[in-house]
Length: 494
Image 1 (tube, rainbow, N blue to C red):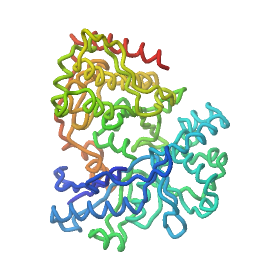
Image 2 (tube, one colour):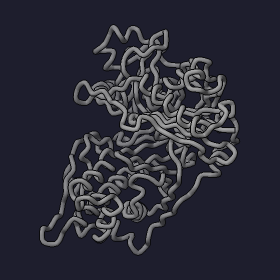
Image 3 (cartoon, helix red, strand yellow):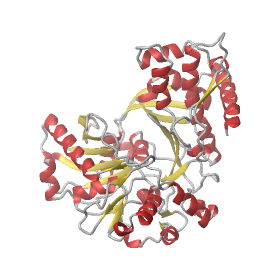
């Protein structure tokens, strides 16, 4: 008995086949092998063709089915993780009307800012828990204003995961978690945010049918089965955005539990057990995968744009030429905690929501030409990334979320001992590293939705813990002082 998970990213689509009894991955692959095309007609625009996701999914599926050699009838459920906040528009024939406007497209910003002012901060924050911002609902506002003829042809709006599920099952539906990331779920009323639909002039009929995150959301159609080499009738029983799904993949379901990633951008995602929000809208709040109207489970999302991209810039620009990341980490570790007074403000990758959408750029402080060298700059860069996490985590703590344990995948910047130790040292939290990824998590989520697993603990019983990093008491004060200096320097930039 097997479970199939898909992770629909903007760079590639990954597929994983998981043995439901052992929880082990038996086959995994992704496509394309180079980054998928992103259409950028103008600065600040980012689009992808939904058909591209489907074509990549077909290639990845063919690969894992060939390498595993299993009978397609042995696959008992399918789960989908997807890039969040995208906008897919289809007509009555279920055909895309235009390329999808994806998460990193910024053309919705002015529409979100105008709505926040017109509707009122208190109304937005108390009902949708965020500013309308640059999310799916405001991307649609751009379409309405700039492509009115196309807007009139819209039958349903969807997220990327909803589109892929439609291609698999021929059924159009979405989830409460998905609607919350669109900014179209009213947490106070427990229904679609009618006041936002009315403000933007959207017909309620464009909202898809709502289904539970863990449920049989459709069955693989004969057409999709023939295209993919799968069996007709396999239930699609789970879908979630990539960050909620990453938390699920790390078995993060309950209040106070934290998941983190540190790739090109960095994310800290924590579960909150009560309805709350940041008054300055510096973090995003969505319905977590296990949220219901009767049991509040919110995912509070801190995103830092300048994370791995600063680390890669440091490797290209500061590190000795020709060395790898592991060797660069060794060079950085030669400097003491706090990098002897050097601080790097890492926000050099555009406006940061945690800074109330200010674009402060990256800056380096405290350099002495007589005493500092590459090791100090490299350490200060990694510490600056961690300190930006800490800055956001303080906001999360103010919302009532204790941060005592952080779950993370053993990947990207969490491969760096310096990065891990700094995060544990400045936050005081224990860090647990696991061997997992989004497509594997989606497969296990599908097992939960199809009732193959009775709960998350059974689904993730086989989750492999690789390492535990505890904060070192003797180093705690040095980290706290370095963070205080970094924060003081950041405040001067704001």
